[in-house]
Image (cartoon, rainbow, N blue to C red; front, side):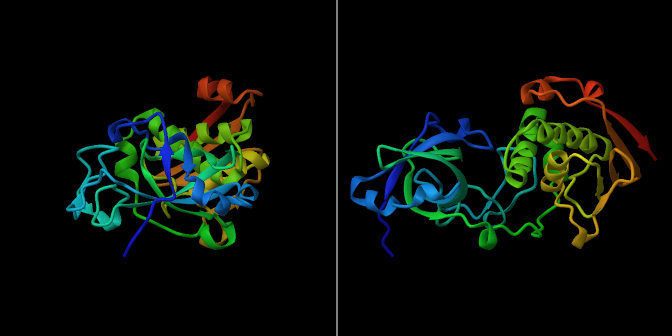
Length: 266
């Protein structure tokens, strides 16, 4: 088996310990001999990026998700996204922002340090690659150990991945999800949590992306009132929107009380 890099990651992050969980904006410098292979790539909004984690420990079989917390339970590396593994390949979906000078790919959500060898690029296709009905482990314990900023970044990414942009409605949905997580003290994507959606399509889209609720798993419904209702362990939380500021930054910085009223029914 022989692999030859097709390019290198160019990033301002040079140490694995400094890499945020959600990644950063970065570039892939594709080597000149592979530039012709990029023809048509700009037609795609997202790419599958495959890289070789050249600094990873290849002798590790069990690890902890230390990016979140050192005291999470240890698991086998095949059930984690840890860089340490027998064959340290990184497979990630990144947003393509543009192509510079014919061979520099400007990307978002890149969680790779500067100088990482790129092995391959493929177009991300929603019909084949997106499995919205997929389920995974309960993230409740991991969420409890996250800092508020880190958890918010995760919610934003889930909302944007489904809705397509971080608009004011999606930002309000993120704030609602933060409050609902605090109330129910659990992962909002678990089967025990369902949601009934109100009239705003952007808020509704983003909450679907965050919770994974859909009619097929009987976790998604429509509210008969102008509100958004979460039902979870021990009761329900009813959110009524008060105002939606025009600025996403203003929404993320505002108090919850200025954005919505919340009634908790046990």
